[in-house]
Length: 377
Image (cartoon, rainbow, N blue to C red; front, side):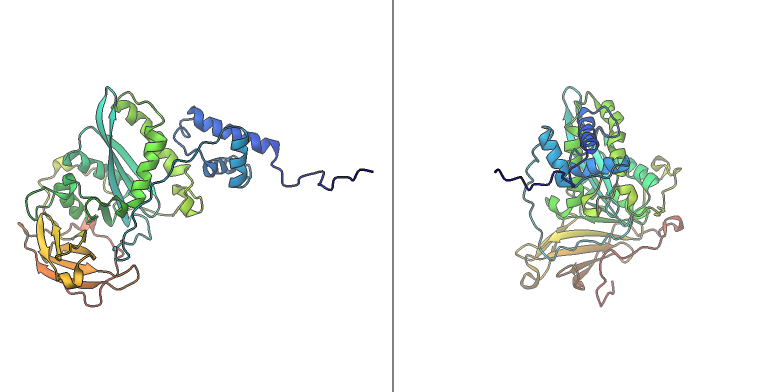
């Protein structure tokens, strides 16, 4: 007598056929590029689950979605991620707990075969991951300034702009204490410019990760013919990133679902940089995050400063220029919760007196760093 199988006749957690077909349909739709709003979407389980839910279908687990893709030969190997250099504990990360506290800024450079080089300007609100993107033909201070103005007219003015040390926005490579037109623009609007250490992309990891998404999802998926072609397709990628890209670090919410009641302080649309005289140095702050060398030196705007090497060699500091006081103060914060200490403070006379901030650009801001106990600069 043969024994009967004890396996259940019905598998209660089996994915419904219509759900499996929906998973396959969404994946194929993304891969086809036929839907402009999904043409540049991620192809993984998070995006498919979001699109299922958006269509009124309860999504299965991410593991189940991946199994469905594998069964139907629709899976793709994930690209290996490069191991990123970890910054020391005393790196002074500024805080961005609310929208428009910190805008992250960077650019990418690409060459279109037969169509020349272009530069992609990327601005990202750190707290809500809200992007503003454009492309320019040449990386000049005028075009970058116009990009920033357009961004702040649409998504609002930040407290700070966090960026690398490209000569276009940091300033000239030889003159000391020369503030670039972009630094002047920031100060004019009451925005603090923050410069990360040179050659340290890991100090701006969020925008670097976004650049990777732009490269993989946008640049590598379409054979662009010229700059106009790039510009015509870019809004579809932006739309996806704002409204249909689930963010893993934010419980799979999209950028528009984070801080839904946020009301930005917009730069007036009638502001025209071409109608302005040369922008003055305005009352405000700008910051330089720097590694202190073995001999205790650091360089700020092409000028070397000396600290006690016994105390500060190998440390990471924040050097803040106060344009009204014409003062350079150097802070060190041992870790993210420690109170900063003032390592040194120097007179920092500029070539002109700082003009007052216009009342239209005055706004209540939250400090980006913990204040030291003895703050007098």
